[in-house]
Image 1 (cartoon, helix red, strand yellow):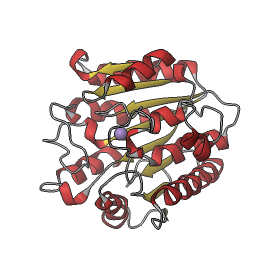
Image 2 (cartoon, protein in one colour; image 1 turned 120 degrees about the vertical axis):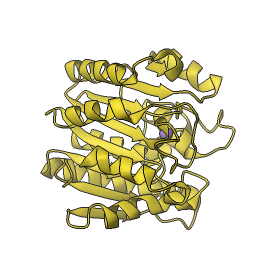
Image 3 (cartoon, protein in one colour; image 1 turned 135 degrees about the vertical axis):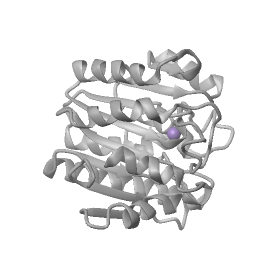
Length: 272
Ligand SMILES: [Mn+2]
């Protein structure tokens, strides 16, 4: 049984180079949640950028509606560009609320089209959500920052470009390189406690590449020496039941890269 009462599955592949990341949410829907209420949103792929913007807007609409009906919403990406839709949907449902966002990721996801070496949007959702003024982001979600930079904490980071770190620091965002986080489970616990104290609503965005590839090889952009999921899973699961925790997102599951179903089993442990 899934822990959260409602699930949205989101097939989304416009923001990353591998189309196979699109299979992740469908695989979860059919293998893990066959009896739960599941909503599958397909992002149109005809034109990459146009499809992406459409998919983001559809997801935002859906998340916003579900949050008005259900206490908690669970979203499966797709690639991590889905976060732009997820968290702008939370903002849409609660325009006045202070929304806290815990971002668990190997990467900073804070590029803009001006700094990104690859141009892939799944490396940009944090910048977009925190109010980077690039015209692409304004086109996607408008002029307002979805999350205040002081209400976003990033954990698990070990692969990033200096421009991303520079931009986040200029915004006053708290982010923790994994190399200086001896106990990620404790840091996550402290971060969520802080966000729950200062915000009305809190969410977690989990990029599966935050975890060590030994445990989660089935991702699009693996990064070595990652988070050991064993101590951190019970902490996440405990927080999922907190009344302020309203939205959780799990992104980047790429079944074609998985080995012995390890990533799938990790997702299963997370939500059951
Ligand atoms: Mn990410």
